[in-house]
Amino acid sequence: ATATNESEYDKLLSVSELNSVIQRVASEHNMQYANLYNEVFYHIIDKNIDINSMLPDGLHPNDAMYKIMFYQYLKAFNLAPHYNIVN
Image 1 (spheres, rainbow, N blue to C red):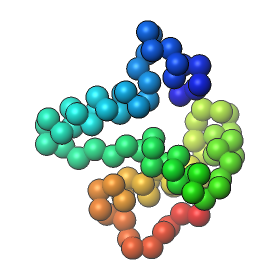
Image 2: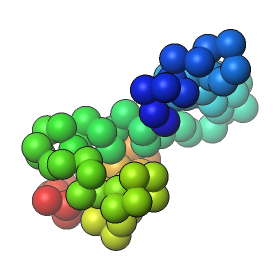
Image 3: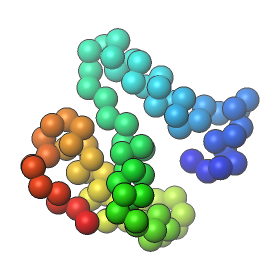
């Protein structure tokens, strides 16, 4: 997601809108849903991590970002240990 494509509502859904659709469909089918987009970025903000250091090419996550994403999935599905495995 970029600032540019997030504002092109006539062409694409914003990440927020897309997550709302996915969450609704998951709920309708009695499935668990994790909003990884928000959780990862809240973690990055909370830990004062430079997002550019996590997306070396500006789009794809590096290993450190994948570790954060994995941990956020564990938390979302109550599988995470009671300690923080990521920095």
